[in-house]
Image (tube, rainbow, N blue to C red; front, side):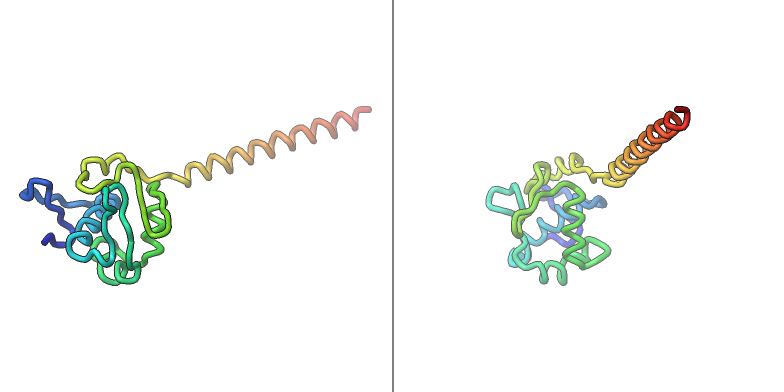
Length: 143
């Protein structure tokens, strides 16, 4: 059995430690699949993972890998990293059983940059609209 925070490679000798969210999640799913499949496990084909008991996962496993034991926070993080969810099944094309080498492809989406760009765009539009109205008023005053 693997200890939390460690993942034996396919060869069974190498120990891999993780410090990223996708890496910790992969380790946790591997650990649960082997040691506690009633809480969480890989799908049959290994392309997704199933949360069978979110309360048990939160109480027994999340705090061993993350700084919290809040299942909803865990799900929000999954969403931030582009995971798709269907009921209690979560998937990402680069998150697969036995393939920790793919985890570097999982990037956190940066909604703050998008939001800031969107806000800047709105400000620019409003500025242009204000300038048009100003020009219109000036044109009316000169008549």
